[in-house]
Image (cartoon, one colour):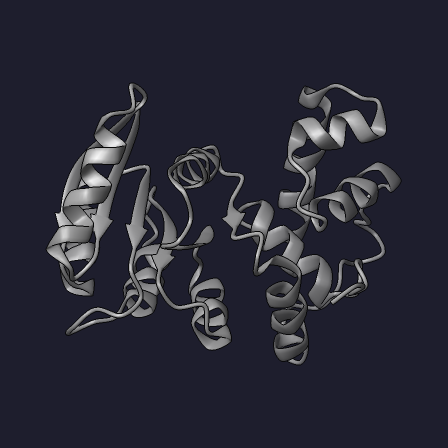
Length: 221
């Protein structure tokens, strides 16, 4: 069972999300918060697997709340930012704060549920309308302050580099497995190695790391 908390300053949004999520057999809503302070307390007290976090909230916004939650050494909650706003600074702020995913409120129900399940698995998610633009620009903005590239004594293997490159294209584990003609469990094994070596929390942060360190070169838009 995936436990989820909802943080949004609009009661009607919280109610709507709760109805959608509680209709799913594998998802259970454990609490709601109307501002960042309540979201932090909810994450601390209930330890949900995922918290759906709005950005613009009174008192303490969602980015500050996300930063506080992910900085907690005892934290077990992943943050999925769900917002109306797709302004770059909000997305960058959410990524910097440690969000595991970013989704626009205009997403359909299937996408929302898939994103929550993805984040709960530790895969991370980013709205496909934003992915390459956001990650590329984020990498450019943060290039001067990121951790140094991997030590030559602990390199990514050729297979790990292949998988990281495909991750940057937004492919799922099963899609990567199909592309490389290997088992999905093998992809998960190599992904675990990538996360350990890069210090990334999840797939999304690993891709950000790849762009920041020049492992993946921005192409397309």
